[in-house]
Image 1 (tube, rainbow, N blue to C red):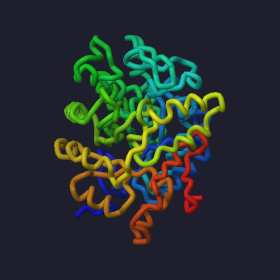
Image 2: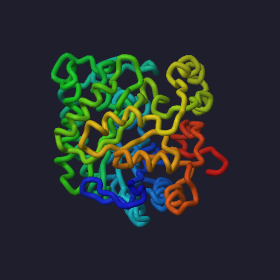
Image 3: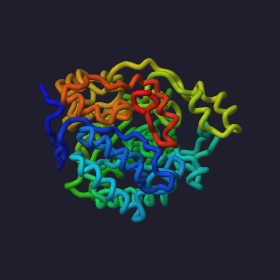
Image 4: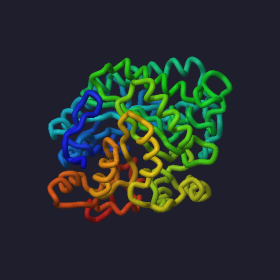
Length: 387
């Protein structure tokens, strides 16, 4: 049996245990740089016992943010990022930065540029994306390299490249979103070319001392999208490239089907309340189709993730609705290298310590998902016990 609370190796770094705080946008960077509130958020998770806390979402450029308010990995951010990683380290945890480019998920109202994508198409919010050009490919690879170096120089022990949720790199993998007929689209090998080039470029940029992970969609959850069979083939390609230390498996599309990732009730009314009045009517029209409700069950990605774990030699991290210590233990015992928790630690940052000490065996999170609409006002749990 694997001890969830024993130290474990993740590439070149050692974590004090096998429980990772998953990347969950914190909503505490209104000016695109670190704030004291963001530091306090991650300090609490680290003090609460997590082996590593993942900062989300760090964009490699302003156009790569979803709305212009996420951290942008430039020199202006270094001082704050260093304070953040120092705070996490002081509590005994490792620090990871999720890095990426939002691509078609970006909001032009905040980024002041058209959203980039493999191909031009109309998003559910009636915005047309811009198909990437050769100049864009070179520029964005440079942005990833500079952003990765900035994160590593700011004290992050690990970087997690976002290959999920139909953000830019994920959108290239999707046959629904990538309609190119050149070297960047068509066959799976061509659709995977740009994400693989980015992963290799980031590895070269940060060298062997920084742990490098990728968050990969197993299933977009949309008709005609990227699914498990193709995803396992891409995972094997990434393993063969020998640039990653681990793979964190996820699913869903922030663009087309976000609730596939979260499961449980869709908080449509609460999302509508965050919008300007003029937009609420339109949201009522598209909200039910975009925000579907899925039955929630403990560790809902485990069945599909097992095929990846069994086929790959690379360490695999299990994500998705992990609430109970028994689930953590059974996942590790069957061969998952780590587990990643998000809402469970949002509801109780001290949960890992409580589980280790025998004071708790389950998170208080009831997966009501009402935390989701709080992402731009400071992501927080709305349960009375979390206030």
